[in-house]
Image (cartoon, rainbow, N blue to C red):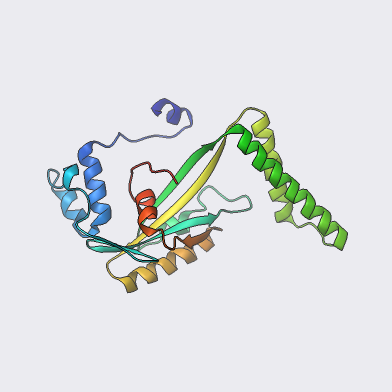
Length: 218
């Protein structure tokens, strides 16, 4: 895994030890003690006590120990070419505690080819319908179709296809502050050409995937 990451020009950090993992878990559920635990290296590094004391899941949020959390799913990524730092508004806005998780899931070649064919057919059908009623193709529709053709060419050349899934976990000390922070993150996502949706009724499951380094599948 390390060799594969380095060959992709990525610089992985060291693997988390059991003590490091315990510290991350404890800090995620109880952010109020995160600073104290980091200052005292030997404290809070037992996996047996790393979990929360109490958790309450609501329809649109999650409460654990000293914080309220809300998990947002990035349901729409940019549909046109963007610069490499397009997520800066979402990741770098100050005054908000958040955790951003990006999961890549390899897709089987046959399934990826089927999905590409479906998208290609939809674009061709839509283009024919627009031509029939006299509508003109715009730049965004052309770019989306060219992207599908590029994916098809890459798949034919032997490259794999990855499904990207993004989550943002927002944390605050009280419900009112949480709602203000969520609204700010949603606005920042729009500035980054993304759309976010709150994981209604799935906050506990979403928190385990988005805020904890456990490698959970979606």
